[in-house]
Length: 391
Image 1 (cartoon, helix red, strand yellow):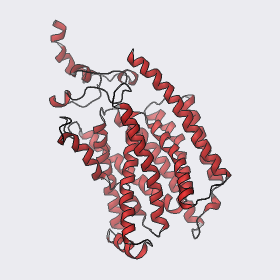
Image 2 (cartoon, rainbow, N blue to C red):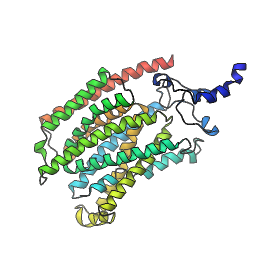
Image 3 (tube, helix red, strand yellow):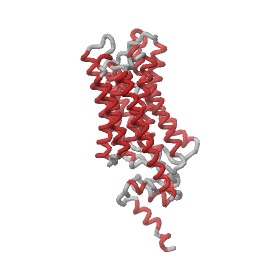
Image 4 (cartoon, helix red, strand yellow):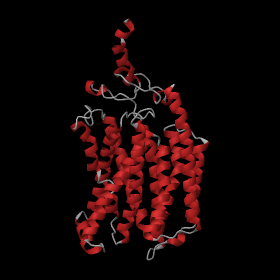
């Protein structure tokens, strides 16, 4: 009885103690207020109302929300990645020319996140108020990563403008080897046979493509612009390889999916601000109206439908990526996104009649093979981890 009476005081002190190792914190499932706080020593201080709302670690595979959230985020990543790449190429094929417009639409969909952030509170599904646990440090980090994301978006726009969809999609997979290295350095990701085998296969896929892609230069495109697009795509891949482990490092202090959406909202606002400044410098939004009426060869209506569809699909892509990193790891998120690039290759072949020769076929097979081997290794690992948590 005496030990129980001292629990609140000891409980408060546990928040300032040195964090437990990751393998210990991830295996703890809490069902009451005391267990919840002790299983999240990295969390910011919670208000009295919010303490009662955090019942389980949402990153634990025994949590009933884990699998539905994982499936939902992968579906968003799948739909967003495939649709956004095809729509971006559609914009440039039909004489859209502004790299800044293409950059702006990648992040301008941030108002869409306000709905899932605020709706649970409005419907009284939860008592947790949006941004309640947002610290100043987390806010500053979100803005910094948002600017990084904005630069990445610009590089992607230049790559898509000058390269076939299939080529740019597979070249982006070169980020995986850097993702593995940076994940090992930043978040102490263990290098196993499963993830190393996957990275090697996907990297070989990119090398084979690069050796055979120079003849695919679109008509009217100079060799200079082709190589600009190629190296911009490489740069986007490298920057994305840094973005993923940095996000995983930040997410170690995040305990629920709602906070992931809140951080994503701040990052997208920062990225949109950067793109808006670029657009203003390059002619402003008035250029979009002129482009829709006089330049885009499908007409004004199709132009604005394309722009708005791009806004939505890019938001799905980035939110799906953020959710995958939160629920699994930065390496898993990068591998899932890279594996989806093979679908972008097939989409480019089917929709835009991109060339699909023997080298590209081998690249796609290696891409799918690497992803399947990683998923199998991940399945075995999760199965063992779930048994340990149940025990």
